[in-house]
Image 1 (spheres, rainbow, N blue to C red):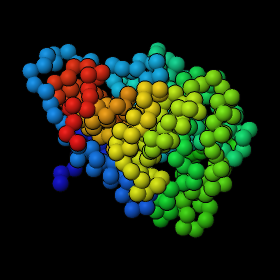
Image 2 (image 1 turned 30 degrees about the vertical axis):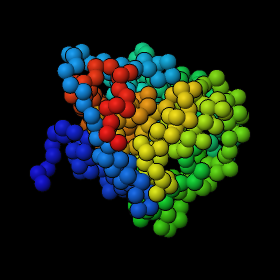
Image 3 (image 1 turned 120 degrees about the vertical axis):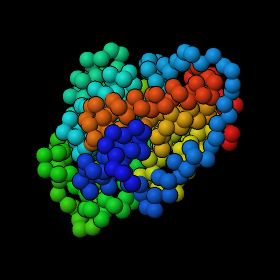
Length: 365
Ligand code: FMN
């Protein structure tokens, strides 16, 4: 195979990014849990579902604009929360935030970011409107969690995205093999009182696994959502839901949006692909909250398939890290623009000029 120097799709970005990253960083970014069955399934389901295009429709003007929780987006795409983006590029989350805001898309910032939530918000505030959400991990130390929420609200984040699929960290074997740690100079920028991710904790173990075990609260239940919502007026988004009954419960407990997700195959290996979970969740939510989806989105046609089943928008994960590794902000912008162009062409070819008109009639399931 010839070496790729100017990627024209997201898969080529992955190949090129590999040459820019250390083995430890690439493995951390790309890997799934266990045998990576769920990771593969997230892609396989998009490959399985085919499209039923409609002909002789005027597609001279394609409109990709939409909104999520009342905020406008130039395309139905957000950037998923991902930890440790400075492993890919010195500007890390700041570059991602610039690229997202300048494309008119949104970004969810991870609790485990390597630039502080205030610095990232500052970048977002230069663009109006800009959609930034804060992804929250609930720590055993309630005071620390409360401080994170208060800081996110004060900094101007528009929603709290609580990740519910990680009471413990999944079994990521490549990270165990590499004894994953953060290199010198990188740290948890939002949690400066917590140190220790820079040194191996236990032989044969990932530093992140130990961090989760020591710091995060595995005893979290639905009843804790009331406490969480009392900390700020921010709307609550639950990320990591894979069942209709949980989705209905999320709505009952006040969630304004749900991200159907298996954490990119990084938590429970063998879990259902997020796209396979989408129909029962859309039915259970029944319009009472917005439904978003992530996991395996790599093509414009993947976005159409998720929207046809009822997602309001999708989130992309790893391809953003590949863009960041290859070209910082410009790389992320290019990744977003590639997907945008693919979505435009795909909309024209299925015979649909508005996102709102995409429905299951376009799918051959
Ligand atoms: N999800 C979180 O909720 N919080 C995180 O801190 C977080 N860190 C991640 C780090 C990496 C390197 C990756 C690849 C994913 C991470 N995720 C995290 C999961 C993503 O938000 C998202 O669910 C997933 O990457 C989507 O799948 P995709 O990579 O196939 O697009």
